[in-house]
Length: 263
Image (cartoon, rainbow, N blue to C red):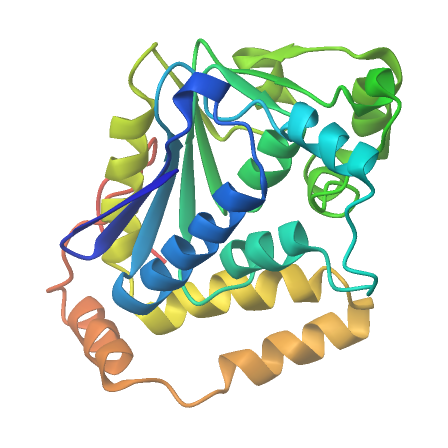
């Protein structure tokens, strides 16, 4: 249900349940956990994508309904498996770029927002249909999706069943990049290549410190920034600063920005 490929410093993790529109069930989550852990251990950056015509249509409702009808339960309260697996992406050691196309719905959207950057092609559409199904989000959407798009937009999606196209999703900050049909994975790979050129220490600070500062008060946030900025830097950081000061730094590969080394 999951594919894994390591190309140089970039891991490619693919949802591979195309016949079910990559709907998420426990078997897929188990395989996803293993792939994410492997990526976190072996790569500097990872790309998450879906095989077939869709990224993910979310929770496998048929399987979830069958389990509830059968009364299957462990009898114990455990941390939700979706939360655990998605947190391995959102709060792990490396950046993740999601390449999105087709359905990015329900749990698929919750998974997509666990990634740090999201690219969508023009076929991508986004929805949270739980309100119309008589259920509630359960894959961390109350935290992750709401922090990306805000309460008002999320409430709109859930209360009305509204579907956003790629351009609307860009406006609501779900997508950072919109590309022509079939180009999302290529664009995600390009972004991953750029990210892999940063030091791993800098990437770790960006994806782990920034979201936590969001949870703090103004004064505590500034204090965490101070502490982070004064952590011991690896030798590679000093070398990069020296090259910049000596005019030897390579031009930055910034997308949509002027070329040349700038701070």
